[in-house]
Length: 351
Ligand code: ASP
Image 1 (spheres, rainbow, N blue to C red):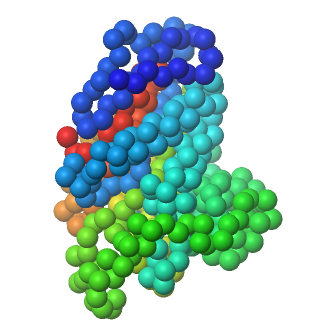
Image 2: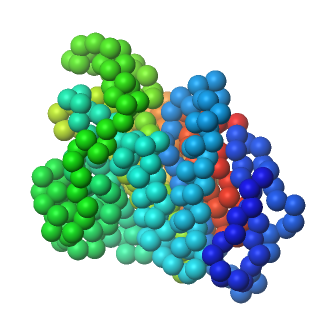
């Protein structure tokens, strides 16, 4: 059982619980909800989907993921609890995961076919429908910070490659050598992937390669006390990707979407399918035009549209009223949510 003390709003005595593996470990006393706090604020995060099973996990690894997800969601939640913006909350949460070697984003980004790292990210403001996106950068320590700068300080929505890096430098963002993103386990994963694929021209081999080579992105969605939604996604993309491949994570509408009128979504999964099915925007459109609730809209797209098409992965969604849903069609998805002053819930597996 884990008790958390939120920053000194002193307005509520909060208790938290961690829900791991579907088993709720609830704190003994009820959560005191602030009577003046009418707006439901909430945040959800993911750290990638894939073939994540209990059998493939060691207790140490499970603990490490649970701790990092808890740290990230609590950092974002603290911003919201103090009356901060959803934009600040999603960036804070994503940056904690970018700085961790556990996830395929920032520090722990996967290797491309040539043995280097190319990072993608995007962010969207549901209040204004402004967005910022970056593709294929090699030296930007925090791609999500760059995506936000592009949204707020440039006249464009999406920058890529060297130009994006020049802009990052002009904006005073921290640049690092590409080797900063090196980790041994991702390097081994590239070697395994290359062995499995064999001939890189073999389309069939790419189609059937192990799911875990395709996943690991991080993301966050939030609704703040002012009713504004935001979504952010950051990734190293797909292990062994070639020719400057760009996935769904920096594509607004595919991997990231936020609109105050419906919902905010961040995706993780086989990016090519998320692009072709415009997954993030499709979920919100179904809510907006068909008046579907967040569970029906999310489940329909992930299970009834994406999966039959061959697309695997998942999403985190927060709707305009602060309800959260986190559907996925893989064996697991690292995820966490915290709705208003409710306890933290962290989960990994599909149970
Ligand atoms: N969606 C990402 C991509 O295709 C990968 C992931 O979610 O892990 O680049």
